[in-house]
Image 1 (cartoon, helix red, strand yellow):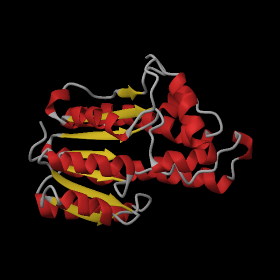
Image 2 (tube, helix red, strand yellow):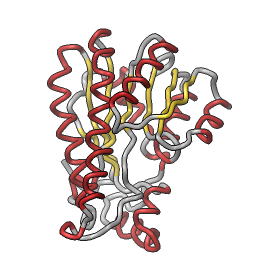
Image 3 (tube, helix red, strand yellow):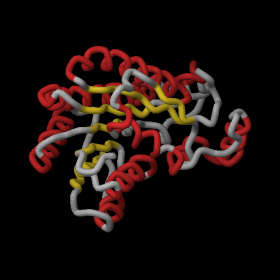
Image 4 (cartoon, rainbow, N blue to C red):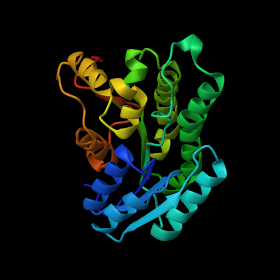
Length: 251
């Protein structure tokens, strides 16, 4: 399905990004994983599976850093087939009512979650347009569709991701580039635990009870959807937001 495809995953130091990188490696893809944080743990895990990888430092808020990542990826593997925009600010955000959100926190959320994703797409656009093919997968969130309370900054940033996904799909379709989003419910990751704090387990329980499938979403539950969008199995799917939320919202 994705053997020998060249795939970039941002925000891959831990959690979902690390899972994507490792599973793509197992599927024999060429994998580039990047993060502003140390990726040594991801590198160790991936290196046990394959030597077809590249680990890079990346600041998604800096367009030069994004351009540098793309250039190094092309230099090593000659092409880029898939970009998974996973990098986001989440666990570090302080939960509060919308009127009480610190303006600096709001700006940071928008800078990383929206501008950062936009920067990565800007950097890869010339490469994919020249090749007349590609798949961009933007990681959104149920928070945008549900209207997650006490997280207006995060929910708003992910709503912007869905909007940008739709615009890019229309603009890039003529070059056979597909752009889709994946919107998971709250996944049991370190970031989610940091966001929920001491009430993490209670939070997971409440969220799961609001789903048709009443279980907490785990890291292993997301990869199949991302794999589908990265592969040619979804070659006629674009502009969509695929909900992986156990039936929290029905579109």
